[in-house]
Image (cartoon, rainbow, N blue to C red; front, side, top):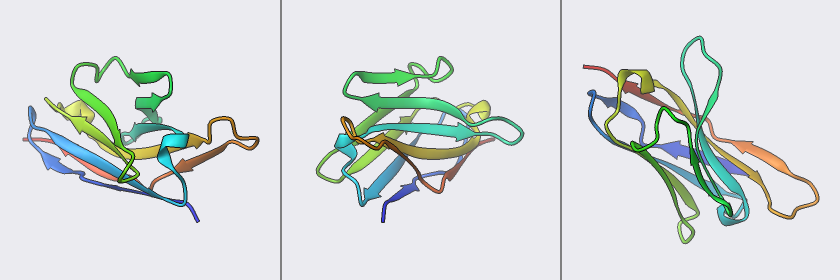
Length: 119
């Protein structure tokens, strides 16, 4: 059974930082394209950052502030978020798509973690 478990969300003041973690079981993250999405109330889910063999990609709204990274030994993906703004408030979801070269591609999601940026 595949599970993606996010952690690290919370309440932070504007200008603050948070690091989200996504730990996987049942799959090897390094074999998948991974990403972080977010969904604010009343809005569609949007891609924030992604990571694959081709490199990393960021939404324009977070470029220069957010960094996606991974630790293969821990089978964990991170999202470092700096200089947070109120408009970053959302539920953040971890995603894994793959495996690379697989015959059947699968899309896995975590349960989400709330990030609230407010003074």
